[in-house]
Image 1: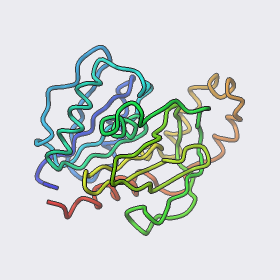
Image 2: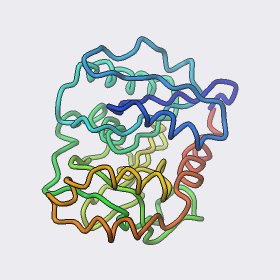
Image 3: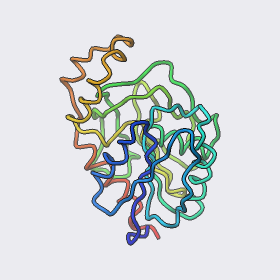
Length: 231
């Protein structure tokens, strides 16, 4: 990992806010690259970055967005050049789809939303994080197959593959969103009252909860630390 280059945060969010939120947690130089629906994937080279983070999105991973072909090509080119990549929710699913095709992702039977408990397994790359912890969730799609040579590093009763790691491909995926702290996370939930009503989920109970640990500080550092010594 070349620390003289910036980390690229690819923002797939519809409101264009994910990149800023993710970058705010990084303790290294970073740049935001917007990925816009209706447009092709940006013409950028993974060799220009020390690492890449693919954000979440309200787009569905099972749909062929205008940028999908380019995004898949970029993920695989980054693997070829040994550039570490982290995927969050949609980005996590993108890593799986890029390496395993459409059969690696699927629609969930139900939505997973709220401060939901995830079990961090002994395979998690840093032993300072283990056991059940509440994290920010909001997704309809999930990963059902990880790339060959990967290990599942976190799981939940709703979604078996909550996180995975592939050291050979330098992939680090999380289904949950580490970029949300309690204030920003609850603000986001409070903006979507109808979604909670539609799915019979008690919004007030969700807003009374919060993360089980400082996810932004911990998860992004674990991603960068995992590959920091790699050349």
